[in-house]
Amino acid sequence: MTNLSADNDKVGDALNAQRFQMLEDIAKELAGDVVFPTYFDAAFRLRKALQDTDQPLARIVGVIALEPLIAARVMKLANSAMYGGGSTVRDLGAAIQRLGLETVRTTALAIAMGQMLRSKEMAPFAELTRLLWDHTLKSAAAARLLARTQTRINPDEAHLAGLVHDLGAFYMLYRAAQYPELRARPDTVKYLIVQWHESIGVSLLNALGMPEDIVEATIDHDQPRQALNAVRTLPEIVYVANVLAGAHFEWLYQDIDPEAGEPGIIRRNFAALLPQIDADAESMRAALNA
Image 1 (cartoon, helix red, strand yellow):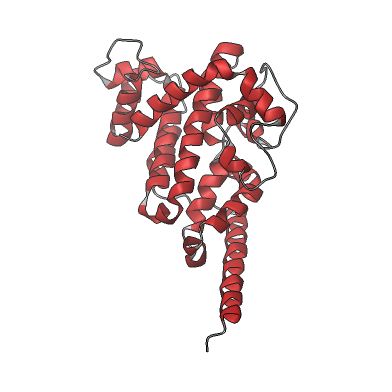
Image 2: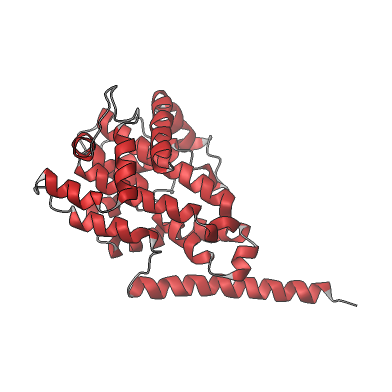
């Protein structure tokens, strides 16, 4: 006769061991060279090549043209409702001029993030990756809109901060997919992400050489704060954008009601922006997922 209790204990022990192993492996990587999936190679290469904002447009076009997928997405985003303004751009140079260099660099990173979440290795976490991607796009759209309409902060900077504020969650899912016990029980990974994604994300952003302002803006973005009815700083933009993007999935395993208390007040205070946020996020999704 099979001892089900003993079998369950073995499964539980193996699961706990792999959860601990994943966190230990991530800690070791963060202390040395962080290994990202190959989806990020083109994005990192392009971001580095386009650091110099004073280089001629022809050179910028040449660099981006070397990455056909990124070039195609840049064209589509430039002609989206979010940026298009009714007229159609028909060449890469015009698309770059419309979007701006920082938006192009951010778009390259967004493409890599989306590719990673849609990869076959992530299939066991399909529900969570869908929620995370939707939340990320809405956060980026909300941050850009908040900066553009309520502050003098560069909307491109806010857009990037909104995009990468949950990078730790992306990375944890990528690492979890490498452990059989975690793939077999994807729900258990959610608890790890809730507990660790913020601190891991900050370490990742530092390892990637992200600007200090971007890194600082992502710190404690999930910790409830006093309700705001206006934003003045980049950290406030990221926090409010996170709330407006419906950070429900991040709170599912915390004792927080997203429609109560300060988060609920914030959503009501900025409710007028929600339709535009949804529209801009949909424009991004259509361009990046094409």
